[in-house]
Image (cartoon, protein in one colour):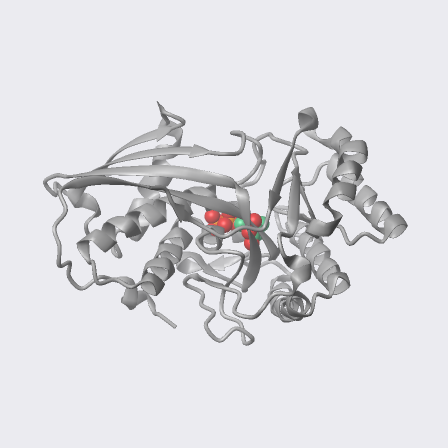
Length: 361
Ligand code: DP6
């Protein structure tokens, strides 16, 4: 396991004047949820997620050597246009990672970014966005230090992405990623995500995630504020212990192919996440009436058909409907006939488990 110090480069052996890279990084959906953190983006409990395939951020990073004048210098384009709203987030990210990427103030950057999913769909773009940016910075660092091996490259990319947004560290690799120290995962770390190290049962091959866009509006409470409310939360300790237990159990389910167990852990985690929000002080609710309608209809459909479809939620009103590839036709028919009515403008996104960040030639 690597420590924070391992990510501070000793010296660079090469010189690079100018160039560019382009990477895509996907979103991910947690099965066991990260909710609550310590200083420096250290998670209060371990989590595990499916890396997605279609919901991605594509970021091109141009760089040009400049005099180190003591400040960061970058242009930021979102879908080809300047995006001043995003600058503070990037600025903060650069500050957090500077210690680990000491070349940052020696270049002027052009960050040109776009998402494959509709803007303001309520889908968190911070995970995919921070992961894509981290990959690009690692490509540049590898030019400065050509001896870097692949393992270090990906671990450090995940480490940097985490400093941008915790869940982003799970978007670097596929298909199932664990983040946070856990007794069943020897290589697991609080500092970066690692690929699920056991053979996953074929039941989960190409597992499907159809994201129902229930509410595309701005969230009332950001994840960052929500995490913070776990400090002093009356159920925090039990919740963190439960996450450890659930990670052990879902590990067994992923290996054995036990869909029943997978479903009960996944759905319980989603509802627990939202119950933590409802029992915070101040309390808040991110689900909408249509979120609950969809959940009830998923349960009814599962009861009546025995098709192993289940739901999970992130920090918002949207519902992720998860199911095996074999059941795709029937579940999509169900979604179109019964669930789309509860989506804003009938919008949903078909996704599935994927491989993680990719460099674009
Ligand atoms: C509910 O990673 O968005 O999606 O670290 O403050 O950027 P920050 O939070 P973020 O939190 C995600 C919370 C979650 C659960 C999860 O993805 O594990």
